Image (cartoon, rainbow, N blue to C red):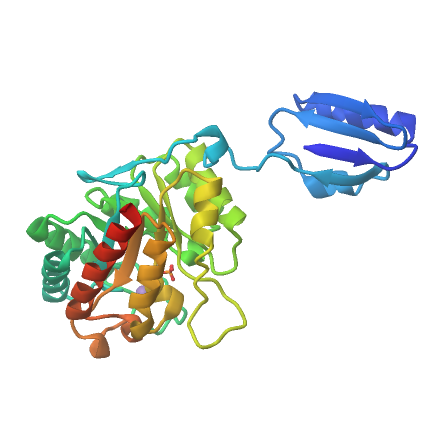
Amino acid sequence: MIVLLKKKPNKDELTNLIDWFKGMGLNVHVSEGEERTLLGLIGDTSRIDIDLIKALDIVDTVKRIQEPFKNANRKFHPDDSIIEIGGTKIGGGNFQLIAGPCSIETEEQICTIAREVKQAGATMLRGGAFKPRTSPYSFQGLREEGIRLLLAAKRETGLPVVTELMDISQLKYFDDVDVIQVGARNSQNFELLRELGHCKKPILLKRGPANTVQELLMSAEYIMAGGNENVIVCERGIRTFETSTRNTLDLSAVPVLKELSHLPVVVDPSHATGVARLVGPMALAAVAAGADGVMVEVHNDPQHALCDGPQSITPAEFSMLTRKVMRVRGALAR
Ligand code: PEP
Ligand code: MN
């Protein structure tokens, strides 16, 4: 971090500031130019409140030259992270095609969809049991019963499963779940992220609809700082002024995330667009942008889905999509 001081800083204030930085365990490199004095802070500056320093009388500008996330930072971990998921892998060239309904509705529904998406080429099964709904009057998910049905589909098909956890009290139901999803709404629930840092299970962390890429990586950092390195980040659209789609898919977040971080990146074109016919094109675009996985909502009867029917594609449409995904991946490998 670099602190540029105003012209002719008060000597006592400067000494106090330097001592304060040193008290925080930082080395301070003072460079006195003709006109201005610059302080170079060396060490772990991640806990420094930049606004607090900027507000000081003697300070002109402050520039962070090191991102505040360390565990998730590619500078400290140049190779892609490869995360093990129930016998399979994601990251570092390992790609996952995750498909399934928004919500688990019945045993027959989840098992039928699981069989069909597997047949079509899915490598993981998704399905919500604890559902974060905007309205308290909407279907809230089958909760622990939903997890039980999802695990039945896992047993039947052998597909690893991903499902959302909304509160740490639900963790007791997740023993046989392969990946815990943290939804967009909980992306900055720091207490929850901290708790998930204590478990070893892979976490699929979605980007909050109003979060920057850096904020997403800071959320990943919460989990990783607690000791759980198995974090997959997921772009699922952000809120903008555009109304023709449910959210705006920020595809550039994929290469940006991959540049800044070594964590695997998944794209969810279903929640990003909210429109079934847009899911395919954006899934292919995500693959082309370098995503390590795509997560798509698939329902055998979208019109009667209890949640997110308009953005759900059918197993037949998913089957056509997987073939195109493979073609795009093949073209990228050439
Ligand atoms: C979901 O995946 O079903 C979901 C609720 O997604 P998001 O948190 O991205 O809205
Ligand atoms: Mn959904």
